[in-house]
Image (cartoon, rainbow, N blue to C red; front, side, top):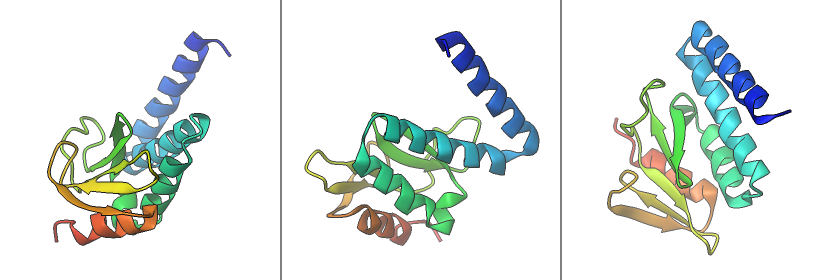
Length: 125
């Protein structure tokens, strides 16, 4: 598939999800991020996405990335405001949890599951 066809297919897929509602857009984004991480052979990030997707309070949020920093938003149209701490997969296999993409370090963990548990512990009530 050429790049133009690929882009058109992705845009059409997003349009269908938007017609169905925000929950469908969120589901599509979770799938797309995981596919990108698999294609990039970024196993630590795949583990992070899988752990986050397994957590119901995070699974309903729109996941987004910037330079492989995983953030979560309630807004599917303009996901710039994070609803939860962000997670950075470190080169050494550890994970750093930050108050937001550019915020203070909340903690560091040895596993994706521990990182997501730390994110959930710092979610607003």
